[in-house]
Image 1 (cartoon, rainbow, N blue to C red):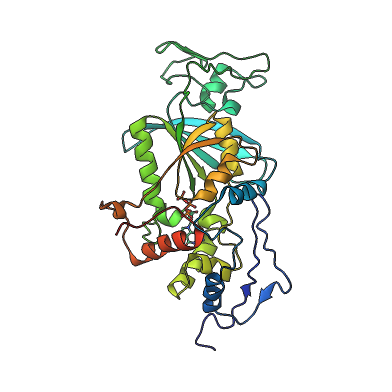
Image 2: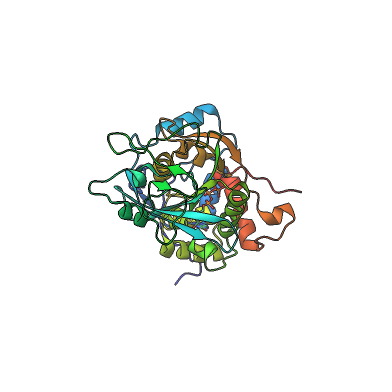
Length: 345
Ligand SMILES: Nc1nc2c(ncn2[C@@H]2O[C@H](COP(=O)(O)OP(=O)(O)OP(=O)(O)O)[C@@H](O)[C@H]2O)c(=O)[nH]1
């Protein structure tokens, strides 16, 4: 047995590419796997500017680079359908409307956490064959609030809100009475460890809470919650990546050692969900410039007007996630993944 855990571990060749919507593909030139290299070799490649994970390593995202990335996005978005919506009073104060989606490209239940009664899913509210008012209330396609004894989903006596439909059963959206400004949006990727297991390896839980807090203040907004745990590699693989991190790898290196791209996620699902919710003009809470391009979509179906930074709370002098692990995690995002963050001096 060798002492160096990385000594005999095969690593992926530096020409790894991952395109939006493609099936987690790892392409390589020549030999697909380069044997007996160590993490140090990866560090060397990075220092020479070779792009081991097929992403822009430069902090300078030029227009050309952005357009190049946009062209790599899939031409078709997944078809999404909102299955159910329910009002959730929260422990934090604001009420939210939780939307559950099905889609035609994976079997996961992606979600939209909506702040604001007036943000409505086209697919949920569309009149369906044989639909009764009761069916519509039960799946959440109602205006205003439900109360015991209510009979009409499309009309709410207490607010006077009334839905209108065209001859296809599609909800008619009155542009004058709905949101015309930009809506605050967060695209959040699932992180069981950070959201549920109190992990201080990342700031995912804090980002989630902060997004909700801001939208609660606004009374308007949407968190699209995508089921792509561990930047798309799944929880089991992420746990292995954590062990590799404890053995000295950074977050990017750990993924590559496990033969995954540094970031295996795609955001077409989020674009499709935003379109379904009518959220075309948005402000996006993120530090990740690639996410902006990806969410807008290849044909710019969604427009990001402003990027709203997500500065870690601890960096703002507030109570937030603190650990040596989270510092390394954030440093790698900035140094290797081009995230727009700088630690205050
Ligand atoms: N593979 C891997 N995934 C991680 C790790 N830490 C957190 N994640 C996942 O990273 C995802 C969150 O994405 P991030 O890359 O942190 O941030 P982002 O969404 O690209 O950018 P922001 O919008 O600025 O937050 C979630 O799916 C987490 O489960 C890690 O060490 N390894």
